[in-house]
Length: 388
Ligand code: XIL
Image (cartoon, rainbow, N blue to C red; front, side):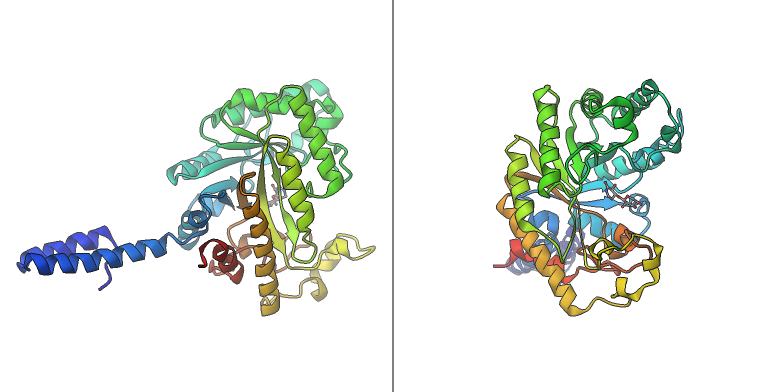
């Protein structure tokens, strides 16, 4: 007998009452029913978020289709597996603040509502970034006007969601690969102090949100050194910074666990939390690995750069699962330093890596496949916590 819901349980007891089933038989039947009910709900709680609930949050990036709950299967999966969300694009300034005095809050409001309704940790991504900026910002000539844009933007966006966003990626990707500060409209017009200004504005607009610096490749030594310097400067000037986000756009071929471990340790020694904010693992060849290769459209049509167009061979599926196992073992080892691990997308068809750095490829970087079914890598990550 399969009793799956409380409703069915209540129904069973009504039937028993109706047929005047005696108390001892009733109790035995009720016990049986209860135990199937319990074991079913235990199975139901087998999910990433429940398996890792004592360790760190498990998040995903949501696209518009997820926020609007357009695909029921994805919707069920997101609510079952994840307890943290990041908006993949809709809070970036280009989308939320497209013209000087115009803001599009519609999707961002829905995103925040979705998170609250489902009791999720809600991340804001991102307040200050050189990329996906509205075109008008690039045209600003004076430092004062850039400052006005940045100030109004942070006050308005972080202010609107104050108390509802758990953590903000305040500044995104401010560093070059060698650890120096990246040239951007912010650095060029405001000087390096713009980072401190941005954090201070965010802290004022939403005093309760955890404030993060977020970047890619900051697990690599030179860039990591730059990030540490940046964070130390903020701290030395009394600016609030709660954590660092290591994006985690990695590859199954070049993954460097030592760099990742060193980074977790060194960043947490600064007294801040470490989050992995955009985790995905490409299984495809990277154009930058080919000596002398330009990143351009030529590769889009090249079968060599898109080797798994129709399916992922078992050997690569296994390699992906093994790499995810290695990463999560390391994360578990340092669970006391890690606040959150967020995947950059819900499933393989949603991943930005199908279009970056080469368009129109078929990539397999996440834990759920194109049919929204768990992959071997999902089982591997789950097994680390649930296998006896
Ligand atoms: C990516 C999105 O996934 C794409 O849909 C978009 O076209 C470009 O941006 N670092 C970040 C993320 O901080 O915001 C980026 O997201 C991926 C790299």
